[in-house]
Image 1 (tube, one colour):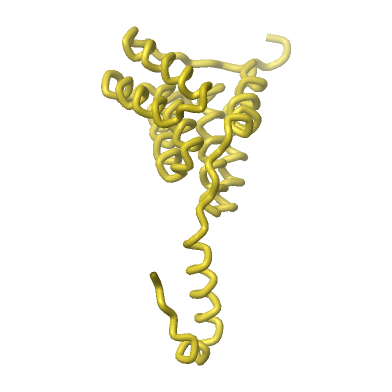
Image 2 (image 1 turned 90 degrees about the horizontal axis):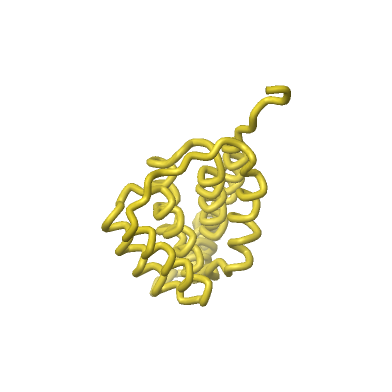
Length: 172
């Protein structure tokens, strides 16, 4: 618990106001992202814009099965179980951008926004720079930044998501 001496702090004026504001914000916890919001803000826009170039990595069958089980657990609202299954899949394929992104989305739903940001960033670092996965990476980063109270970073990430979709020029 943080104790603030208001008499001493009053002499400092603006600094005191800023300190009290920050302490008040630190106590708030952002709510986890619900499945419907995840679908509307991350997955659906990326799918809708996916007419462009797509890049898909080779999959290990065991990791693929674990990812499918994790998706089922996520659909049933069992986000902790989904995270456990994805951790196992990532032990098999630690640099799989789709697994990393799936874990980022599960972390958003668990309210683990820093973790979601880290997984989405790793996915983007090892994944394609174009297509649906790229857009999901940036939309996830934007949503995580938003929930962390980083509005500017959130807007920048949302803008970057739009640049992931590369479509074939007309007439080709």
